[in-house]
Length: 196
Image (cartoon, rainbow, N blue to C red; front, side, top):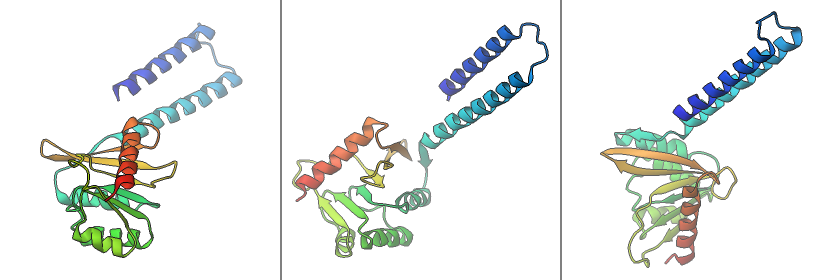
């Protein structure tokens, strides 16, 4: 955020300096100058708003309880398109609302789950149309836990959850903007290829 504010402050100071250079006596502006100034201010205001909006949207989310995590996961998974869940045991999917959503996604053939080994919930979801990939043949279990929405599309996004000092932190990344996304995609492809 400091970088955004510093950058835009520098641009505004530069524009004021440019205006003062062309109008050193601060005389009345012509109509063309007023129009140019108004358009510039509107454009800069929009770009500042967009930078701050993008920054806030990329900020990690923190949840101290299961209700907050469940609410986030429901909103995240319920978005359109295919979902890939890379999880340890599906123990987080306890609420009826999330289970119903997972079964709906499975019936629509929009759900892929990567697990170390099959679970009862995974078996139920498999029976209604989910694609389940297990990696029990791996020597050890990957630490990563993440959920990709709109999998396979150019607007795909990934949410990565982890525990930080007793608080659940979720970071989101967009397709192509961060190497984290590429590594997660590679891990999914690897598990799908070697699924037992």
